[in-house]
Amino acid sequence: MESDLVYLARYPFLNEARDYVRGLGLGFEEILEHPIYSAAVEVARDRIIDCLGGEYKPRTQDKLSCELTILSYPLARMVVHATQSRTLLHKYASSEAKSTLKTLKAEKPKVIEGLTSRLGIKTSSQGMYFLDFIKLASNLSNHKPEFNLVNRRVKDGWVRVEEAEKSTLLAEWMRQKMIEPIDLKKIPPQLSPLTEEVKNRFGVETQQIRIQKLDDAALPPCIKKMITALAENSAGHNVHFILATFFLGLGLPHEEILDVFRKSPKFDEKLASYQIKYLGGEKSNTKYSAPGCDKIKSYGLCPTECEVKHPLQYYRQNARFIKKKT
Picture 1 (tube, rainbow, N blue to C red):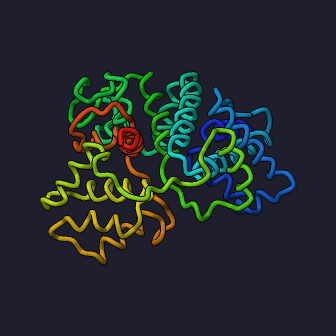
Picture 2 (cartoon, rainbow, N blue to C red):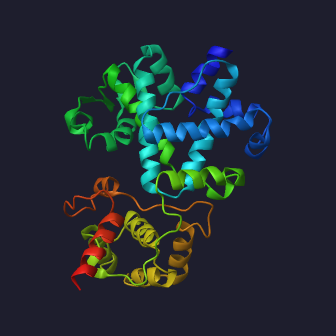
Picture 3 (tube, rainbow, N blue to C red):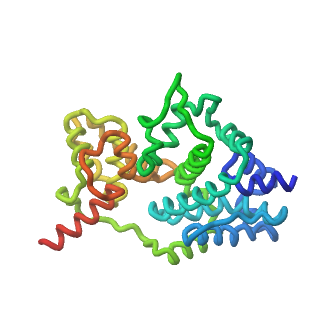
């Protein structure tokens, strides 16, 4: 039993770990008030600080430490998401993945195969199913050319993957899972003090900077290209999503975002308004973030190399530069 808990503490993103937490018969708010399990908040705090400050190692000394480590995973994830800092979230997720990769590299091939199966990743003696490989390797291929599909051996829909590479792909699965949007409204209020501590400790602005007026000259080339596509009635779903979340990320008022979409010959104000409110969290339980440059490139919507990682970063830097010149 204790060996199973060590396994779940090492890989708390597994469904079995979630089921174990549910098996305690306590909701998160009850856990946070529990005389013993409430200590998971402190473990979550250490987890976040260790990840963002260097290296995290799961605590697996005994049954209780394993349980607290398992509980700390969803708590830490909620706290980092609650900061609403995309930069902090991605840094944290990458560090968690790095820690997981180190653990995975010490595992036997049988354990790795078990994990891929549990996560629904299709593998066989021929390699990894190409759709699973593409999804997991899309980000890795940006800085590791060997994960680019054109550099792989592919046969009958299977991509040849070396044993050592499976650990890297599993760690990437964990990173992607970590950054998936969560329902901020369901985060227990007891986590607010820790959220504020993390914000203050790592320099996260407590209020979103809202722009007063959109400066078209400061827009990144990809956004300009998408607005043109919108006006030419050649914009697909990805373009609509990116434009809406980009302008929401800038803090542009609802009416001004609608003005952007009015450029479309097929503009439907009621539908566009609903979609903007949905993506902004008013009509849903999730506030969606604008995709970064890597994702935009994967959609084929990046017209030029800007030397930034996110279109919001480009706009803010460019807007400040233009303001200084005037």
